[in-house]
Amino acid sequence: MAFTLATWNINSVRLREALVLQLLRDEAPDVLCLQECKSPVEKIPMEGFRARGYTHMVARGQKGYNGVAILSKLPMEEAGSEDFAALGHARHIAGRLENGVTVHNFYVPAGGDKPDRTINEKFGQKLDYLTEMRDWFHGKRPEKAILVGDLNIAPREDDVWNHKQLLRIVSHTPVEVEHLAQVQEAGAWVDITRQDIPEGNLYSWWSYRSPDWDAADKGRRLDHVWATPDISNAAHSSRVLRAARGWAQPSDHAPVFASFDL
Image (cartoon, rainbow, N blue to C red; front, top):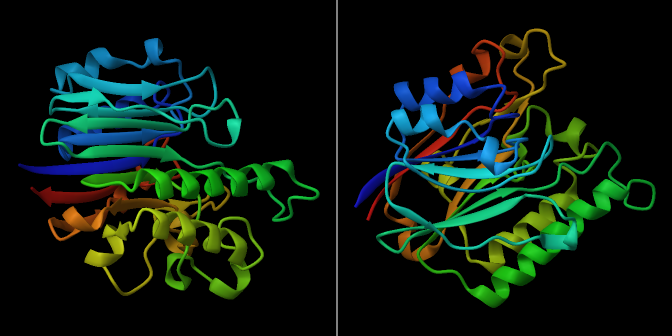
């Protein structure tokens, strides 16, 4: 079975319903994973999504914050969710396709402004969340699985616009990069985006604070597509839909795509 998957931090699925519909119409991924939906599950605007053929959804939501959802044209059943670090946040949902592939959709905590857990509780929560992800995947030993989402870390030097300037900025600090690497190693996850695009600067997020984000291009690659080794060789055609960052009233993230021939 061949399918295309996309991941997108939408920054309110209700506020940006029109953008989701535009993506579904123009790009038509078989599976769309959304983060930061900021909506209870029952208020996610499914009517329009169903009209585009996305008749399956698994989701976790909460009012005004966080929230993850997987929309699918393909039959999908829920495969569980975890509350890592016991934050009580809707940050993970998993769905299983009929071919046995499990899709994990994550929204890792951003971590606040200061990369020091002694003065910034949110940074400590982020590190704890990643540690529990690591331990969970050590125990689960995932197979035939894909992990996507806003992981809120840009791990490589060419995943940020300026490596040296961002070493002390949350999302690119060495301690965060090391924690993410441990999660990746625990599941033997393959970074599909960088498997397909191994060289060069690559970003999926540009701050709202930049009045001309496109020209300044001070981006970071915070959004990821990983797969387990047993299916990683079936992946191809990775890309970032940068143009979506320039749509009307956009999210500050752009969708990231990958295709799989399984």
